Image (cartoon, rainbow, N blue to C red; front, side, top):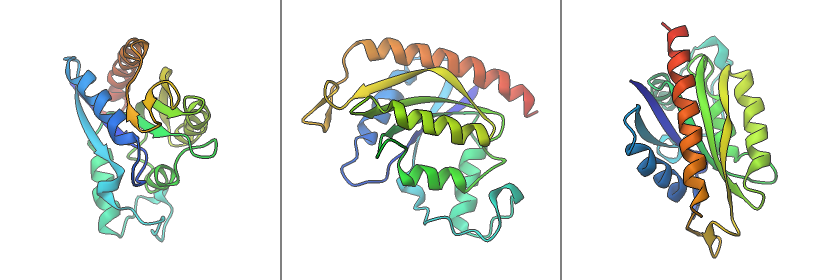
Length: 185
């Protein structure tokens, strides 16, 4: 059985990512096709990239990098939960991605995003970054509107259709995650 990390892509105080990630996690736990785990970037406290060598060298000197690398290495696939900040991904997420290289390779990713346009532009940027890290990303995604899925832009109340979208994305992610696991053996 594959392990899927649900990564909260924001460390901002008052962020919506925690509520959304919990919704994804609770939904996913009802399935029996993978092990799911919440992975909160805030728990890793990664400073602005501070490694001397490029991540592709795999020579990590800082303990926070080594802990982050071990976590990502232990997972087979990812669900990125992030808002859209200025038409892109949050800086903390980009920083966390840049810390590592080989640990991301040949794994699968799905997306649950939110913003005024559902976070679609952020996901498009995230797809580009993940492609460079050799992460395969599934087509289906969950796009949440700050206007219709959040009360007062802060209390998460998703409309029912998003559960169907999440199911479809998880189905694809599990298929790809299992297929790519064979490449890493």
